Structure formats: structure tokens, C-alpha cells
Length: 245
Ligand code: NDP
Image (cartoon, rainbow, N blue to C red; front, side, top):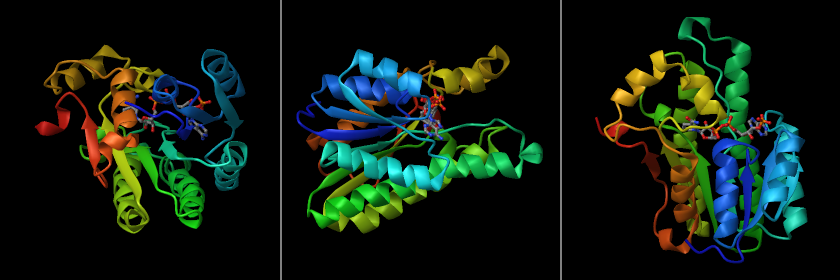
């Protein structure tokens, strides 16, 4: 995947999949602008790869907008956007709280909308093409116990991706999503670390293994690259076949 000279904004860059995406994109020649919540994570990322960093809590609407504006200011222009930041607060449906639901929606769906609005308006004003990849999940298409808010947020994110594709496509702004299965990150360990949960999930994955962050990062890099120039509005499973059943 060749991304030489591309300036890429990645959210949720501090840990897990987002961090791996930053490392891969940098290795592919991209200039990375990394947004995350914990400053120490961004400091250690900046010690690993050349990147510029912005600390923001994307659950706050104003911080999401200003993080995107700051990135534009810092970079001069952004060519590609990866909306990766996401949270999962496992609760049974009956016990799901309004607070957990609202927070999940704010990070997993609303922040994606707000950040992409800022970046896409700049692309349109400059008559520049762009590419967006949203980090969705297999949970957008298959119900998972104890994930009511998360499943609803990722289902919403898939549809947001498609509406963005519909409206932004005429401006040559490509928008796609990747939909991973369980991926071995801090979030993956938190939700699936218990063998009582991971065993039955593994049994539903035809390849018989969970994803590694690099599997997801490879799909993101491909969708951002010119090799995917005609791919638009897709929700791409990276799931070892989980959704094939
Ligand atoms: P992690 O929890 O391991 O890492 C998420 C990163 O996003 C962290 O750096 C975190 O920062 C940051 N982040 C979370 N909330 C905010 C916020 N409000 N503002 C700014 N940054 C924030 O998650 P993963 O790497 O596992 O997940 C990345 C994406 O992939 C998510 O969208 C997730 O839903 C999706 N996904 C993950 C799967 C998995 O099994 N791991 C499976 C399918 C999809 P901090 O720690 O400081 O809060």
C-alpha cells in the first residue's frame, strides 16, 4: 500500500487498532496526525513514529470539532481520515444505562459525524478528493449478548457511512467502513478475555482465530490507498468468516 505524502488524521490513536493503523500508515509513507484521549499514549506513539498529536475527549462534541479543526491547522491539509476511536461498555440489555448508551453513541457515532463534517467541508471548499474509513464492527450486523449499546452504535455507524458515501461521493470523497471481529487489543481483552466468552465466539469464526490489529490496519490502509479508488460505501468484514454464516 502506497500512501507517500498523504496526510492522514487517525482518531483513537493511542492504543490497540488505532495505534497499529498509525504505525502501518507511517510505514507506507503517510504523515500521521494522531488524536486520542490519554496524552501519555500519544507521547509514546510520537517516540515510535514521526507524527503530530492532539489530545481530545471525542465524547465531548466541542472537543471533537476542535480536534478536527486543530488537525487541519497543524497539517495545512488533511488527505485521509480514519475514524477509529470507539468504546464498549458491556452491559446486558435490561441493565443498559442511559449514561452508557449516550456515551457510546457520542464516541462511536456522533464524533465520527462531527469530525468528518469539518474535514469534508475543507475538501469540498478546496475541490480536493478525500478518503474516509470508519471503524465499525461485526457487531453492526450480528447481535452480541451484553452489547446492546455497542451493537446499536455500530449499526448506526454503518448507515452513517452509507449516507456519507451517498452525499460525499459526488465530491470525489470516498467513505468506507471496516467491520472487524474480536481483535486482540485492550478493548478486545476487556470484552472477550474470559475464556467462557471467547471459546463460544472463536467457535463461530470459520478461520478459528481472532483478528490481530495488523489485519484491521491492512484493510484500512488498502481502503485509503488509490488501489481502492472505485471502492465506496462498503462495510468490509475483517472477521475470519464470522458474518458468512
Ligand atoms: P481500545 O480500547 O483498545 O483503544 C481505543 C483507543 O481509542 C484508545 O487509544 C482510546 O483512548 C481511544 N478513545 C476511546 N474513547 C475516546 C474518546 N472519547 N476520545 C478520544 N479517544 C478515545 O479499542 P480497539 O483498538 O480495540 O478499538 C478501535 C476501534 O475498533 C473501535 O471503534 C472499536 O469499536 C473497533 N472494534 C474493535 C474490536 C475489538 O475486538 N477490539 C472489534 C471490532 C471493532 P483512551 O484509552 O485514552 O480512552
